[in-house]
Length: 107
Image (cartoon, helix red, strand yellow):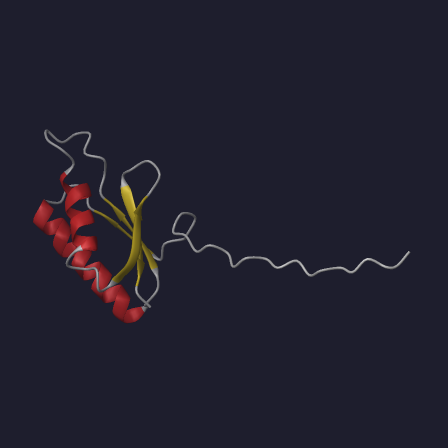
């Protein structure tokens, strides 16, 4: 009997996801108005993109449990990241638990 040929095992490229990423900076929007929160998020994203493109940030919005209406920051920040800041943001995801976003800046 002949020898069996071994075929190399090709590993797929690892999937790059935000879950499990270690954020370089965190911004907590608790106790801020919606407009203050938006301004702080814009400043954070734009300053970190200039300094460290491709970095991951965490933006804590809270879940709105103490709000009388729907969670203001959660929805407004999602709209900001997918709208006005889409040129600076490569991707973002709501973290497990639903009270914060992980954001990867464009490289």
